[in-house]
Length: 179
Length: 196
Image 1 (cartoon, rainbow over the protein chains, first blue to last red):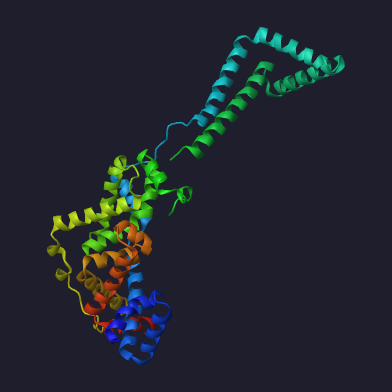
Image 2: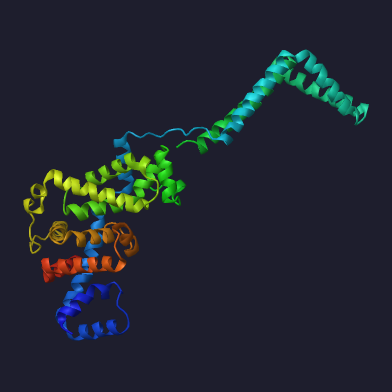
């Protein structure tokens, strides 16, 4: 086989594309042919030079930023998914319940007191009275410390819970929805 | 920097996300296919300084065409086709002769100025000039392989050619480069880089 034929095989030889008998014949030829060895060195260097050209390539992230800027794309909010409505519905329900309790605080308080008393009655009168006093002492105690009436203490606890739900909801929205 | 949130997303998921207006998905799509698009543009245009602008234009076209892309073709093939057409149009518009390498003063690699950075620049320009002289299909395959870092299978898919043909193109491209380059001086200058 002529040198020209062997030289044609050298790029494949370098890429490991030759096997068996073909590879062995190239090895034998290279051992006795300085010209083909020079050619092999060329292809090796060419491979290195072609790979090194990658530094000409702009960074994909930079290119993506340039393209989105040219298109005027901005980060945007996706429409609310169904599950994202959960904290929203919970907050709305909480507000509604708060309003109902506030507007009908007289009858509601009586109703809940009766229900609570009946439930607590199951545990015995002594336990029921003790617990009611403890709750009363706790709310009035906070009220005294803060200089507020019992209803304001309950309202502030309520507002705190509401704020907690809203913060959790906002966090979920920011974490999962923002594009 | 690659967004870890979309690293494993399939092409169709990225295309769907970008189509629905997700900037994050579109960015990821650009990051994934920019090396290929840039390689295609360079493969078609040869040594042209506006390759980066043309590659950006490719993704402007991709964005605008996303609403019509329904996944009948692979995303890579679709982007490849847009990149190739865009590069051909760019070449036509600007008249390649005006911006061809002949107009750029390229010094030969045997220049003996000792500065390594300068020598590297000369070698690089020499290689670019030689690349621009070989057949376009061979250059395109070489660019996809080396600049685009694509496998033979990927190249064969986007170019719509059998793997054997892709290998032949790359092989012939290298042989053609050997013919147009000054082989011994090229090796010598690279040896100087390795062992100054």
